Length: 560
Image 1 (cartoon, rainbow, N blue to C red):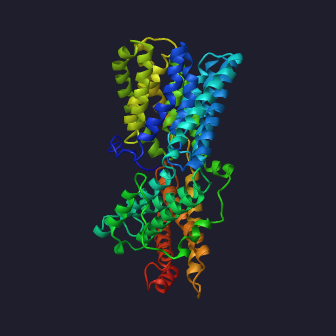
Image 2 (image 1 turned 90 degrees about the vertical axis):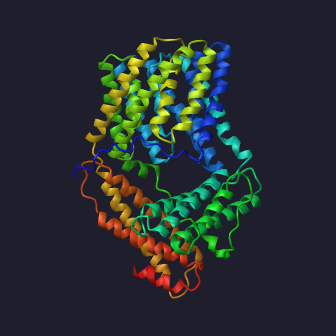
Image 3 (image 1 turned 120 degrees about the vertical axis):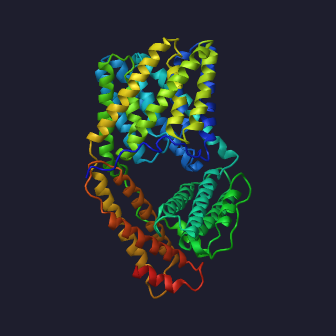
């Protein structure tokens, strides 16, 4: 099949800002400012490129519980430093631009695959690729590499502290936000259900979004299990209260007609700040036993998760390499801009990649105009240059969650001004080269996305259908037992089914946006979602929250 059409309508429309847009925005300023100001005072602003490599790690992991955030941020700092080390080594060993572009493309592909496999989250591989690609084209010697890496590690350590600092005041903030989002999304589904606007029941867009939010909130609570700095009992009580709220959200998904959406919204609002966690009506103790019985399937190995990403990695390597070579052929002095532009495009499928290409071009063109307006101010003094870059750092993170192109309006002039930390440059030439590299990188990068077919999306969809079928069968067997099913096995089966349904919807959406794919089993997907959600609702009602419904729902879940 040729695949879906490439849209233009809505690609540039602005959405609501992220609930935590201010966290990465403030964190990156707090992480970047001290190293840059110290270097400015020492007269060595030319070294800021290395400290910024570490400082930009403060952009990551703001949605993760602090126990998990500590590990993720440490790995990001090490990964950033590792990519920088390889780039500096290549720069010291060769000056051949074709070879350097090749190394940059391979690094970009590896960074893309690893970030997707680990579900690192925004800004994902783009910042890593920007740092390593720029380093490739920075003159380097072997003797200076240890010092430059030391600067990056020092700044990265400071970024780690910045990322962890909010946990001292609000140790359960990420878990509370995830639970609040699940409650709000579920309330939206309940309200839509009442008006009949939630989509084809029972798996329309509103319900799928609510199910995904509830599943993500459970995963956030599970990731927060590692002991933290606060007393264990207090941590246990807070998590138990959050778990009870998620149980109520799941009950609302199972019986939306019997749920008051305003009650869910009230609980969600109460989770903001540091006030006490709302306590809904008491639940039987065994309602929460499942939190200690995470499905025993375990996480697949990293190598197993990398396998399905091979086509995306191949697209990235090919597109980045060709974009860099094209930039060199046009005589552009910074081919890494074209390489990074191509790397930033690649999303889960071709349709989303097209959307990102349009957003990148529009944002960069507007960003170049912003640079032209800001450069006279930045050239007044190096201190002004640093302050302007800090303001652009904040603006980029404040705006990018509304739409990628809007954030790029700040990212583009910031990237151009960073090149002037060592010395001021010809603004006209910078603007010209950036425009050329943007257009070349976007065009060549998108052509590579179309050329490399991702036929594995169909295979993954088949596996997702099988996983839903197996998870549903297991839950249905437990529901059909003559005696009430034990709480822990049924809860494990319920959460395994919920995870499989969320993965099926995400996989189906990804596959539907691919070009030159085989026909998708859309009717089987619809049937699997219908039966899976009905069985999932039966397992929730089986808890006893809807009196008198247990026997009926058990039989209903098995029949359907």
